[in-house]
Image: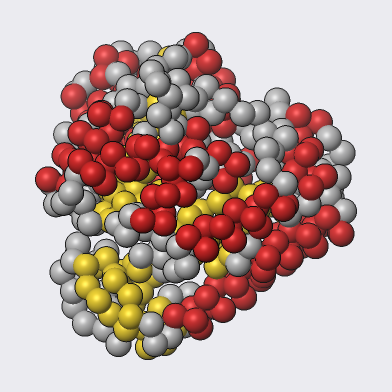
Length: 409
């Protein structure tokens, strides 16, 4: 049996690809490639289509099955591609019966989905850390974002089910787990007693004592709860790194994006987290060239990198997604968007270099991802000096860096 899964997009897609592989395999799917798509930008959709055409050229006899967020939001587009055999929606992709049905298009109304199903995978092949999906969907409607239409409304996995999955992965040898979802800081609002993310974090750390490191994926700082702040202050097994969904440093742009935080809120959040956990590092998503963004507005995004003390930036050149309010706003020239994205990336490179400079001479606990590469607790990549067993956690002194990664002594 041969099932290849080609994954685009976020950590959640990476996690779900393992469950997709299992569902398709149990349905007897053979000699097929599953393309798990991303819809966050037009470029992500274009790359998925390009990959589909390349796969068909290289493997003319292979069946190509398309799923994921872009398959959900643009099912007709993918179904019209001659290379595609089936298009399977985000809710259907875990159902073995669907993978074995040979239907051309199986995509239901994602907004009608009210509960989240658990996917008890044993791990992710070739990785020393494992993802645990705790939440799916999003109740918010940022004007630039298509993802709620691909994922549906927010729904959470019960605390006990998350703890059981975490325990299962630790028993399988994983030293570090990453909690992931679409909007994990909205966790629990749909569950009885509405437990927040901070409660979930504390329960995992209490009930899975053999877990060495727990990490969070991207969060929305506007939804951070008191228990989460307390966990970062007092739980050393909760890793001191956060990737923030900031998007802009200008208040008017944030308002037009329909974000729920201000520039001041973002700066204050980082300052408070740093007070509670001085060794914490921050990454962030920032959009370049949002509709109506002036040069002065853009400069406030550049300044936010320093004011929040960011060490890494994920830059998104604005990409209008059909059906979103931002796609109907006055658009900037693509050359301006491209130029601002370049300046943001340059700023990010400088911020990363400054962070790496500060790490020289510091002793860090490093999780070896391979024999030659590891990650600090702050998620900084480290080139290891000697061969180390993948999965080992070792204390190392940082002796230098190459602008992208630390070099261990």
